[in-house]
Image 1: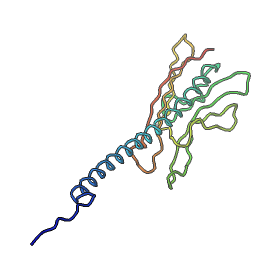
Image 2 (image 1 turned 45 degrees about the vertical axis):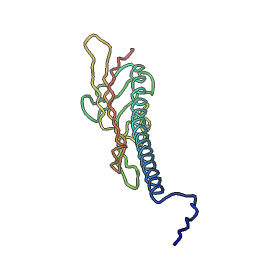
Image 3 (image 1 turned 120 degrees about the horizontal axis):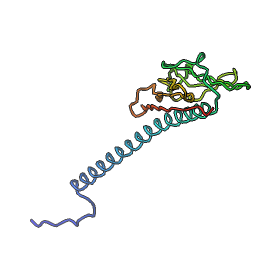
Length: 185
């Protein structure tokens, strides 16, 4: 019996195809893992940036108003407790300013969340929010740092946290800022 050899066909063997498929699967899994980490880091940095922007803008506004005020209305202010209240005096004008917090409910992620926001009321007018609705003020404390014979001085302590109704750890961000301001008088 004579065996005739069949012509060799171009292609891959089953072992070669399986190894190639396994290599492609490993590369894809590594690529998706890297993509997931990048997206998670972006979400975390976005949450932190939101808290930072809100806190910095609010503190900057309070610092500017404190420096320009003629004095602190200690009777209308609430020092050393959360939520603090700070009332600034601008004599001869209808521009006295009151800083405090208030709560409201916002809908985020299909649920309602209570938010505490920082606000300012100028000249007895309607309060205006100084922080956005993606963060909540977890602590606002004013401390009277005035020493006898010195210009009035107030320490501001504010803590903020991003809203995270779903409990996603990558969306957790909080920030604490402290500033001491002396009135120019």
